[in-house]
Image (cartoon, rainbow, N blue to C red; front, side):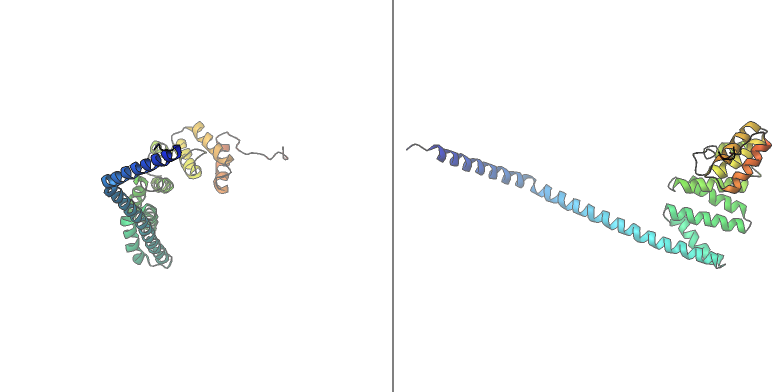
Length: 231
């Protein structure tokens, strides 16, 4: 008895489904354990990542509380009590808290007339590549300012030239020190250019701009920008 076309189609579908089931069963028997192991490892990795993120948040919270407690001690005149808190953060804190602790230690050393200790703290921050660049730049400027009278003018220019530019957030502080260093080397045109740029930079503090106007004028450069109506 001949098989009808519709019966043939049903027969072929059944054979095809059976082959697929056999292939899937064989595939699972061959790779099933590896797939399960991979899923377990993935879940473990996700769980480990979430735990680590939470752990970092917990540690950061503890370090923040320690830093605030140290600030409270300093403001309350309890510098000795603040010392151990700052020391622990300077050694074991995350980059931001470590930098904040070292900068605070440097300020306290300056108040205690311990320049060498302050210089070392500033340099530790400036040299630490794990610390945000803003902290490192601030530490460099503070150290140069602290040692300014004893540093050769050329050294000041060389160390701060990257920050003594109008597009730098530290142009005010760095630019003024570099300009004065040029003056000490009798490089008047270079000093005048920086003073003129400082005088016209609205991002620079008003007191510094006023000084820059005077210095630029003494060097023969008119750095006063007159309003349009005054003209």
